[in-house]
Length: 385
Image (tube, rainbow, N blue to C red; front, side, top):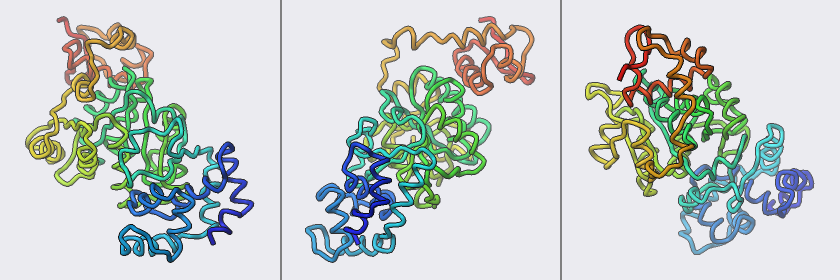
């Protein structure tokens, strides 16, 4: 079966189109593992690490013995063999070509070394729609939180993401409703870059309500998945996807999370990888912030309340950032559009300043923390201080 797969002319042609400078057999083997193994399969990862993708494929689907624990190998084979269909590997390559998804392999210039910190649990491939260079940007921060976010959580996520993106950091999140979506939108509104790691194929908009957001991310950021096109998101895949979010960020910030939120899973991965972990405090009476308080109390997460504290968490020396990073002409435009007497809603301010509403909200949050603007019941105004 392996020889038939590696020698299939149609699949080899698709592999050559996806990776014209590589050996088609090696490309096919890497793609095959993305089809056969579920995300984070450490047994598959160990085989690939020790044997290379082609030989790991031959061995993994055979009955040979190996020095790894025999039970682990046999269990792995029972997982992989039902998916060992040449058509599935061909569909993965053809599906990516149809939507313009790029195939990234370990060692590529756009493959982040941060992903390799996952060891045997690192992905065999990554499928990317958008700009893959975002994965190797010099400054990346992961911002995650509850799907059922409160207005407070959405506002804080937008403030943090917008400020960080405006000063050059790539915002990494999971594309979900709530905090993830707020972080992505604010990064885009600030004219910055953002990466959404998906729990299904990059050709599937999940949640469907984020189709427009994903289109925007694809245009000026990157949609990324380790699963081939056509793969459906599952609960396990969402949890496994979280390790990639945690690995890619120089730090992970949990904005809002309940006591058992999936965001705590991302925080756990960040902690195990040695990544700095931050949490945003909320009202002590809010169940939506109970997970953040738990992270600070039990997992040594740092309390963060603004973008400057997130940069400190990331190890960025704010005092020595260049003037082009500190100066933000959008702030000047927004302040010019504000009155010290008459408050205005964000949409009206955005029109006057010539900015997007998302960017305006992010800047208002930042300027509010600095005491330069204030919000009252009917809108925002500039302070006289």
